[in-house]
Image (tube, rainbow, N blue to C red; front, side, top):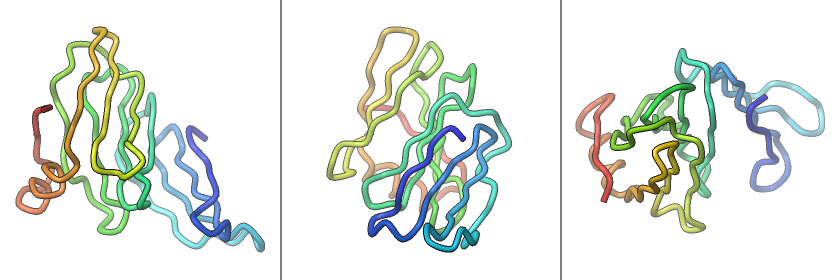
Length: 130
């Protein structure tokens, strides 16, 4: 797995595979509660937003970040602006901003409000950093 953690109340384990597979498992019984594919690309890094709604992922050898809506189970947008492979992704504690670090030695800040608004109007939309 690329990422695994306990859900908000510790009742479930959320995991993301290197292949983009999402799985929610009951932490007591081990029963799979939810499972689906996010993107069909091998991932370099992935992180879930503090409100557990969004998954931000960087495919391997990619200069972009894919934002996936875990509730609607669809891609909200692709963040483009780096000139090198994205190596780190972090949400701020309130989930209002997303920061990305790239092999081009730049850090970019992305407002989640713009991503959410843009994603509502266009599937697989693209937005630029602030």
